[in-house]
Length: 264
Image 1 (cartoon, rainbow, N blue to C red):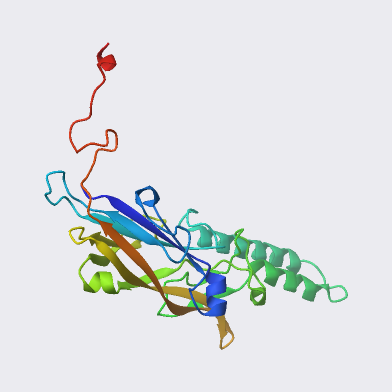
Image 2: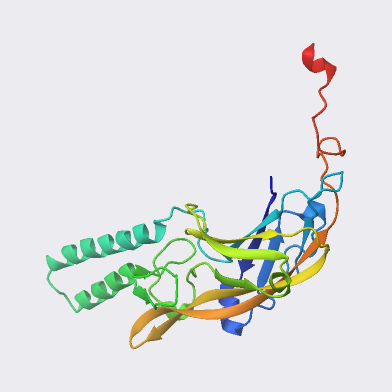
């Protein structure tokens, strides 16, 4: 059975959009540190991929890579799928309740304007998206604590998660990896993720690139919009030709030893 290798692509979206580069704003992790991966937590990750060979030298199953992009300083991806919608509706309900209370009160010294300003702050601003983005459409902007943001000029808002739109480069051209985007019922990945099988019969270090789409909050014709901005990020795979070994015994693959005490 193929081994599942996970690569976390953590992006500091705010700084990346401000500087218009992913250099110094991307942090890569994988679950192969104990197998020889290098530069964990940096933009220079080299993912170790163990050769899939049996002890007799025959080819075993390919390894499988999975890429998972996340945003640094945003609402955690583990919240329920409908979290943004729920918080938007709550803000709207609170604003309607305040409007109903205001309607039954006479205006004194212009306090109505102040109350309306407060209601506007409570409800926030609805943001639309373009056809080129997968960001949340028609919902309110939230900060990292889940509160509705009304002053977008402060930049203290939660960005949509980065989206990988393509994986290409040397490792793909040399047919070392075969990447593709798949649909998934996994709520954390929002229904899509990138995966690839790895040909481990050709040891070596290979580079690959990811096209990553971020979303910038901009104002167009008086409307706040999530505008897609595309970047490129590079990483490496280091394929090592080693036989599969039993993690319990350190020997070849086979039956596990059973201690005599187990039958006592």
